Length: 236
Length: 186
Image 1 (cartoon, rainbow over the protein chains, first blue to last red):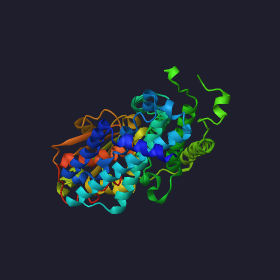
Image 2 (spheres, one colour):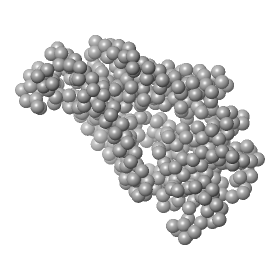
Image 3 (tube, one colour):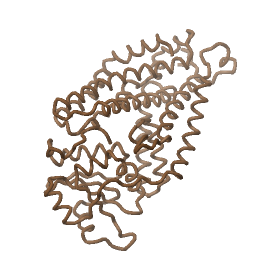
Image 4 (cartoon, helix red, strand yellow):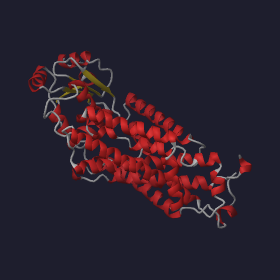
């Protein structure tokens, strides 16, 4: 991890006007709804993956398209360092926003007479933070191979394909196809749901391992993909 | 063009993340093995929702308690229905929330096994225009408002829909105590 890269990525992500606008819309709308209908509960604040997508769009691809990487890699910065720093920095931005949104939501619920236990709020916020870091690792993988914000497009297209696979599985009543579509979706949207993973006192190691498997695999493949690429102004 | 071996090694920016790769491969292997193990070894989780039989008794209970009806249209042969049962209705938090907030009614299609359904099942399927399984319907106690969810879209999506449907069907403020756990909780 390179502190300078982390710092500048945070600045780049946090002060980009289109991102700020989108983030505000995505984070504020559910809180507004919650203020009118507190009984919906914190579930409506599941913004972690969307915030991750907004803050992670073009995580690497934008630097490739703008020519920043050609300059950056003339310095003693490894590509692994670059990928990990970008991923971590975008994750930190998303985590900060998620915590702020959940805290606001919990506050609104308390003001409307539906206070949520602090432990549940903390677990919910942690789940959303992990979901944001998870989707950022997937975006890092796609972004290492695609220019601009092609990573987000790829993620959307593959999610749509996953949905179609799920519909086909439901139509054909095929348990194996259903499982495949579920794995597909879990890979594209890595998240850790503690209730599911530790439901009824029984730890589902599969759920725990799946999340970390997806994150590490995506980051490792992102670095390997970037290592295989040539960056020079002559190739553009 | 892919880099040559010399490029990849000679003090360049392309250091291979060996540790990360090793951890990723190890976790991937563990994931596959655990997936198979949990599928084979893990016993099915018990359904914790107190389902009622379809009929007038459930409707009367809904009117008396001022709770909406939650119909679960399913069939024994339906694989997504079993997945939903295992992931949603076997979850103690979700089950507690459903038992407290709804009058849950399971409507099982028996046409494939027995050739026909009971009159009550047929009537409910027609009334709510059930096309596929699973289908969840939340209906106000007086039947004036309904919300329908076709197919199983995963645990999070289903539990979120249950919360939103309750508010939509009962209005912004359901009767006090109808939903004791306003927390995300699944």
